[in-house]
Image 1 (cartoon, one colour):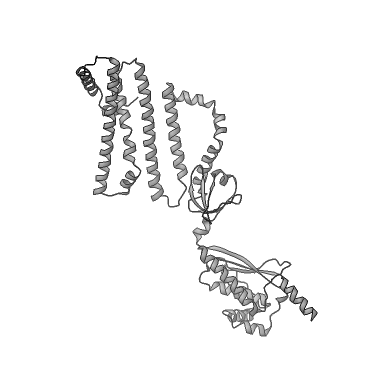
Image 2 (cartoon, one colour):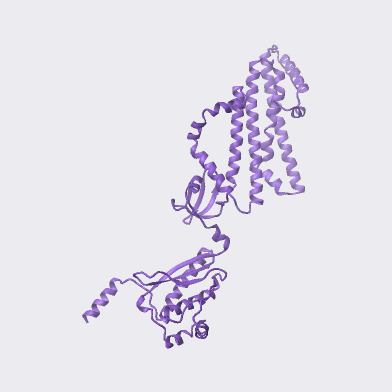
Length: 428
C-alpha cells in the first residue's frame, strides 16, 4: 500500500470527483448513454493521460532545476546527475503512483477489472522503482570510483551484485503481487527449489563469489599486469565484473576469463613491480672453462686502466680480500680473471644511470655445467618496457665486448663451420 505521507501529495478524491463529473457530462454531450463500463474505460484513459502528463511535467521541471543550478553553480554532482539521467529515471515513479491513487474511484471495490488494473500498475510501479534505485546505485558507484577509488579496485562487480539484488527483490515482489501472496510465502516456496537453482546457476554463483573475493581482498585491480599460467592471458586487466575478467595481451588481443579461474588457480600479478618502479634483470652468460686463469701482474696492470679497477686492486693489496655485505657494492677477487670481471661489472652497474642503487646488485657465478661457468647479472632497472629491454641488451653487449680484455671467452656451441675449419686444419 502507498504510505499516507505519499498519498497526501498526490491528488485523489477531489480530482477523481471532478474527472468523473466531466466524463459524464462529456458522454451526455456526445449523446452516449451512461454505461458504467464505458465511463470506467474513459476514466482510466483520462487518469493514465493525466498521470503521464504529470510525470512528463515533473521530469522536465527536475531537469530545468538541475540545469539552472549547474548554470549558476557548476558541480561534479550536477554533471553526474545529468550524465546518468537520474532525474529522468526517478521521475518514472510518478505516473504509476498517481494512477494508483485515482484508480479506485472509477470502480466498485469488488470489480474484477479494478484488481487487474491495480496488479498491472503495481508491476509497473515496482519496475519503475527498481530502475530508479539502480540508477542511484550507478551514480554512487561512478562518484566513488572516479573520486575515491585511487587503487582502481574492480568495484564494477560490487555494483553488478547490488543491481542484481535489487532486480531479484523486484521479481519476488512482482511475483507475490501477481499471485496475491506474501513475499515471505513465495520465498518459502522457492526454498524447495534451492538445490535445483544452485545447480542451474552454479557458474553464475561461483562468479559472484569469486568476483567479490578478488575485489575485497585486493587481489586484482584494473590496470594490473597479470599472467595466468593455465591460460593464454598475459597482459593488462582492462575490465572486471562478477562474471568476467578481460585481459588485453601484448598483441592487443582480449582474453576473457571467469573470475573463478583466478581464485581456484594461481596467477602472477606484476603490480608490486610497477608500484616499486623497478624491474628485475636476471640473466647469465657462460664463459669457457679453459679461458679462466689465475691473475698475473701483467694482467692486473692491464686491467687497472679500466674505470674503478685500480682502486679495487689497491684496496685488495692493502687490506686483503674483502667481502662487502651491502646490497649495491663491488665484490670480486684478484685471484682469477673471472674474479676481476665480476668486480668490474659490479662497478659498471653501480655507475649505470638506469640501474637502481637502492636495490640488490649481484654479479655472481652459478653452478657450472657442461657448457662452462655461468656468470649471472642480477640488478633492477626501469619498468618501462622499451627502456628495460634496451638497458638489458646494453649490459650484456658490454659483457661480450669487455670479456676479451680479461682474457675470457664466451661459450658458443660448435657450428658446422667450426667443424669444417677444424677438419681443414687437421688435413693441413
